[in-house]
Image (cartoon, rainbow, N blue to C red):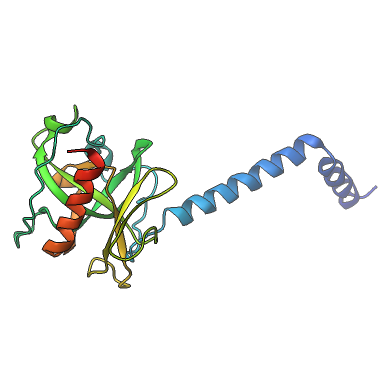
Length: 211
């Protein structure tokens, strides 16, 4: 039997092996999961993803990741955007945002800053002033200018479009999850809401959290 014939026979035998089939099936599933995760991690608001933005933190971001705000104490919600190159309430900025289920992982995304407070007021991690912010999405979950709660219990407030989205798509903010962000986690300013839309978001946040 020639070498080619021997190799062909070995390959056919391997293909009939249950262990080899399971291995191939597992590799295929892993590849599909990887592609789906990359698609989910894509930018939702018209900004290209940087390398490493989805998944594990890069450039020291993990050290800046803070747990979400807890407790029942009310936030001081005051519209105060300023032209000072710092994130202020009423402004939409870009920051690395940790995933709700695992703060060691996350993605770079736009958020609406709604308040600023001392880190110790809403959590046990961090120090000094922290930003309280709401995540943005361009996925349509509620009608224009309204508030709605989805099947997962998340409350979304429509804020329309603005210059934070390069495609001009309408956006919504999630009112029930209060992000705590170190100011150093903010990468750049993306725009600002007008007073009317900020007040509508503030009212929804107040209602959701029972303040």
